[in-house]
Length: 313
Image (cartoon, rainbow, N blue to C red; front, side, top):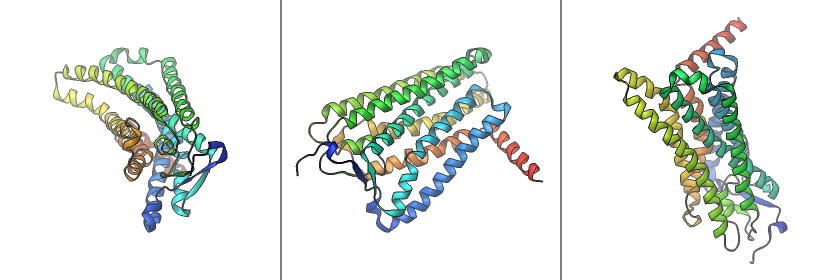
């Protein structure tokens, strides 16, 4: 059957986890539980940071925007995925698929830039602690956040335009649970070499540039930590970066595996597993690994719960 132009077909079908058969309801229960925990935790972190004046610092400001970005990212993907698990394969319109790809790609890129900004914040805090307040002033923080979001939207739009300027073949079945670039690109007809190259270049710019700034920040941080004379001081300094490093490694590891490779190496089952990791698991790490291990956030959470209990009393 010959290729048809995208204008002759206005939708796609998600196959998602159809190969799992009766296990889909079990996956639905598992992913729904994880999603509710993720959504509740991220929203609660945002509210606590907003209400507790002790957390009105650049570090927690960036953390709250990372939670916001992660929340928006999951909202565009997981509810539809859960519907697909509960009711079987779902259709999505051509325009709806483009919109989902734009927002998911934009928020994913924004997360990368926010992680880079948080690395820079840790660099200033450890390498120039006496000048931290003056250097990380509210204007600079606002500029860094705005740049992260605008850059994310720019790269997300670029990736979406590259994909949806292509013509698609007769098959409109997406072997995935959302409109991600690799599975949608695999449906394109003809020679997609230039499009693959364009996606690869944009992905490299997002991942490598942001990761480069994180690497540079931590190179200076490591040098500063090694100059600290006491072992206790080195441990304390490194502990402020450990959670951020954990999130960075998992986030960039999954994203690099998905987007920095040729189309020929795509594997449907393996890619879905990796996609589940960075759409369901990774957003959960932000409040748990990064936030809830932080003493200041723990204190704020206890105060919030105590205040709520006293209010009820």
